[in-house]
Length: 178
Length: 170
Image (tube, rainbow over all chains, first blue to last red):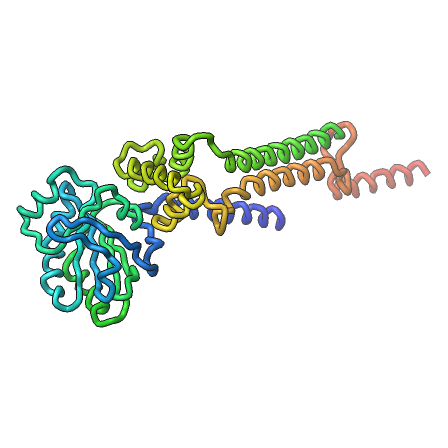
């Protein structure tokens, strides 16, 4: 009898373990997985500017970089526009660079949108998606925070808000990482 | 009984052959180099998840990002990078989840060895059960003609009745 109970208990535990593993795996949004890039050096790039000169990331070393991947057809990107502009205006003289990376856009879509929205921070164009692929982009908007040493300290998936950005950026501007 | 024992042995042998054949096939196919670059692109792309799709590989997805990935694979092959290096580059950016098959290191190894362990474990259980069924009971209380065995009380009553008969005869 005891052996049967032990066997039954073992089977129940094994089944529960499998169910738990499946439930954990199936319930997880694959797009929300942590980026393996966080904590590592930000991949370098040089991209042509849409509203200014080309930008090479490594030349921004010593400044805090907020890098936002977006496209003109992305409505969620429009929703976060104000927060990004506010952050740029508030911290641009404190050592912060806000860099928009236009990604998978069509024709003059980015230029038209920037003109209409009055976007003020520098925007570069990732024409062949090489930079987006190097940053493991799964969708837009996605925002990366890079500290003064060129290390990625955070990735924000989806729309950002000004308060969250301020909370993340201020410690970096003071010299620390999050 | 001997037939059962042979069947168990056959199950174990067949399971071991199937497992070895599967692993061998995976090992051989995994290291096969296609002849042309488009085939190599296809092979590498079919082993990568399209990052913005639910369940499509980079080879199967019509998404622009997947197209860019195929193009990047082609460019990297042209630049002399090996398929493993190209895969490693995507893993560095996206993590192991970009691979269609689990990685062969860390916890990903479980996916390769677990089926073998389950098959061998199942075979072991079958063998143990067959051995148990084959082993004769320590006390076989069943009656030869298939009737239900006597309880101890019935045995005692029977013993007393026999003794009474013997005493009466004496």
